[in-house]
Structure formats: C-alpha cells, structure tokens
Image (tube, rainbow, N blue to C red; front, top):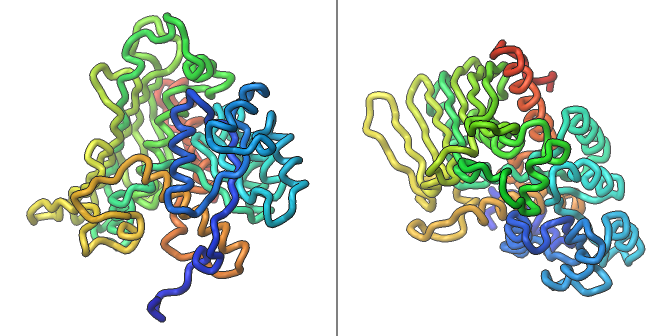
Length: 400
C-alpha cells in the first residue's frame, strides 16, 4: 500500500462482520438483493435471521438462506436475546432491516438499543417524529447506520457528485429528477392482492403516500446526493392518475434547493409502458450532467460551449470515488445488485472503524445515513402538505 494512502478500517479488521437479517424471506423482492449484496465483497457473513413475521415460516425459511436451526429465530426479540447470550466473538454485530415500512422503526430501534449497527431499506420510517427519534438514538450511541438509497451506490452517480463538488459545473442553477414506473398503470387493487401489494396498499403500513414513500424519497435523495444540497421548499401536486384510485400514484413537484437552485421532480408508478427508470439532470453555470438508471454505466457531461462527453464506468480518469465503486473493467456492465453492495461495503468500513479505532476511508463516508432518512421524511411531509394547500410553497426541513 502506498504511504500516501491511509489504511482502511476494513483492512485493519481483516475479517467479515457477522450480520443478522430481519425480513426478506421467500417471496420478497428486496430480501435476496440485500442478502447477496451483503456477502458480495465478503465484508459480511449472514449468521442469524428472522425471515418472516409469521413465527412458523420464520423458522422454516432460515434453512433457505443457509442458517442453522439454532439461529433462525421466530421474532426479533428472540433473535436479539439469543444472540446476546452467545459468546462475544460469535454473536451478530449488525442487522439488516428489510421488512415492510411499518416495521422499520421498531426493528431499527430494538437493534440500536441492543448495541447493534443497522442498515435499513428505505424509507427509513413512516413519520417525521419516528425519524427524529432514530436520529437522536444513532447520534447518542454513535452506532453505524446506513439507509439503502441504492442509486447513490452507482459508480457514475458518485462520479457526478464528485464533479459537482469540485466546481466543474459552477454554481448549480437547475435540478430535475424523475422516477417513472408502470407497475400500477392497471387497477391492481381490484384483483387478488399479493402479500406485497396488501401491505403496500395499506397506508397504515406503507405510509401516508405510497408513491412518495416508495419512489419519491429515492428521487429526492438522488438529487440531493448529486448536488450536495438539501431541498428547502416545495410546491406540489399529489394524487392518482388512474380513475377511481384512492391511493397516490403520481406526484409533480417544483422545488428550490438551499444552494439557490430551482427545478422540478415528477414521480409516478402508473405510467403505462414505463420500466423502472430514475433520472437526474443537473445544470450549472458551466455545464450539465445527466444520469439515468436505464443506462447506469454512463454519465453524460455537456460543458458549456464544448462537445458533449460520455463518461463510462471503468474509465481510468474517473474520480477515485467512482473507481472504488467499480469491480470490473469497462464493457462489463455492473448494476442494481452492485449498487447495494457498495453501500454494504461503506457500512462495513464504518463498523470496522468503530471496532478498530482506525479512521474510516474517506471515500466510504458518502453513503446515506440516518439524517438522510429524516430529510426524506420531512420532504414527503412537506410535499403532501403543499398538495393539500393547493400547491402552496412549503418549507421542508428542520435546521441541520
């Protein structure tokens, strides 16, 4: 290792961390993504879990992910107690929460109170008050907390953030984001509901606005992550585009950022013909950057008055943050699962720093944390308040 490169906490630890999983059993979409991402770089080994809210299925499902019967638990409380009784060198050190939204708060809180580091699927919780409490607990305990806004794990998104941070675009003036999905273009609520749809379509479980919690928080975080600025105010229209629908499937938002930029954000799950695609476009005084999930290995850069450039994942001249997030050479695409793995790698570095006392590698520090979760919930609350007030401009944050 070069003497100019500080040692990483992970290298100092030199062993995988022991992870317990909550949720994500058979039938889950996000569970296998989380679990495969956690072990992709051998930073974690999954040693315990609660794979279902149903006690019987939780015990049965443990075998499907290779857990011994003694460490497939029927409830979160039983897992925390059972693991605490194991020798220190054998018990779990962190948990991954991938349950329905209404479970996030209690599962995260219980793990933090047990002294465990937490990585949680988004949205972090279902209310601003819950988010503020988690911020207080994480900052008081100094435990590592990561929120899986996974688009921030893509190499070319990290490249975009670094280019904005370096001043290459100059002052940021316009920020546009969109997230289009087509899965709810048909009246899915009128048929036989799957287990996933049953909880998603229940506002008590999924939150006050399905579209905002499910994908609006992603668009908000991506725009804030790339620009390095929080959204300050919003004027919004939220509702349903499918006739007769009683839950939100669309949001159109004008936003203003703390850095003075303006722009817009549109998110919908009911765009017929659309695939899953999130896009961000940032215009500064000196040029423009654009990235979209449909073509994630490339970033388009248009310097003012010069030819448009296409930067590719794996290029030799990329910022170290982007290079660190890539595993293979250009021409071999990386994508969704690897973006989660990059967040798990950053999470592991943060935990290792706390265990070893070695400073975490600086390039690992940009992953979304507990305050990002709070800001996302404040954004959702402000958007809904603005829409109820006929699009009135509404503040959407508390002081940092």
